[in-house]
Image 1 (cartoon, rainbow, N blue to C red):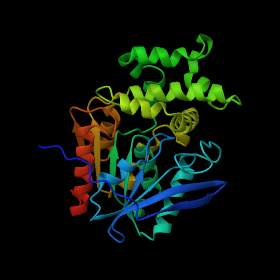
Image 2 (image 1 turned 90 degrees about the vertical axis):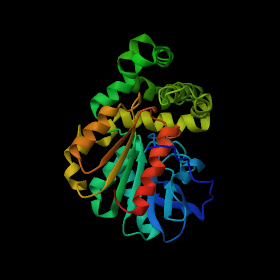
Image 3 (image 1 turned 90 degrees about the horizontal axis):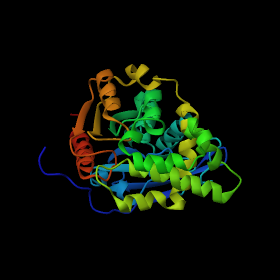
Image 4 (image 1 turned 120 degrees about the horizontal axis):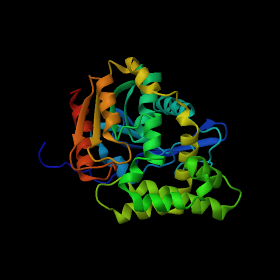
Length: 319
């Protein structure tokens, strides 16, 4: 592939609103593109992240009708940073409610990082509702992937940042950093919650780009984004993402007939390429595009190029 593609021009939603999904949760959603065109849904990362205006621009707006939404407790969804009644399978149900709200028979499911986990869980639950999968920075929520990010792995590549992250926790509690952070992120003391959220978010922000990106790191450190990201993320890690070990690969036959494109950074220190490779081996029908000069972030030029090429490919038909 020669000549990197870039995002499509800035675009405003043609519709936005809130969807009540029960249990006290309401989801903020946006729709962009051309009503009645090829349907797609965007699943943001995290858990605990949010969508942004840049996320609207990964599809040709003349050819797609895209729904984007903030998952439970995230972004503009309510209640803010809520971790109760918030798990993988409830969000899978939310995606299906949103599809029904839009009136689509099926749609393209696009997810990066945690969004790729969620996309696979949704597709394996509702394969008849998925036309294609576009995945970035694959995370299969296996024990070794969780260990890599919050015990030993990424810490070997980013030792200064790891010392800062682990150093926020007293030595006696460092045997289980996820639990120690979760305890602080659910503290009654707002100052304790915010301090832990900043450190958790700063650690993840430090490991997702090949080159340092101060603007992205500042975004991760924004308290309005750091708190829901850290609280929800820590809860999901603590509860093993509400998945059995290796569940997504074990159930891969359920999506055997669904076309897919996987965009993976070669130097991804957050979700190492072995997970994308394991997924490709289990699901050989999918295409794996390894970006040689990228890490994890969706904003990196090579990743943007791959994702835009993927949605363009499926706009023309399956590869």
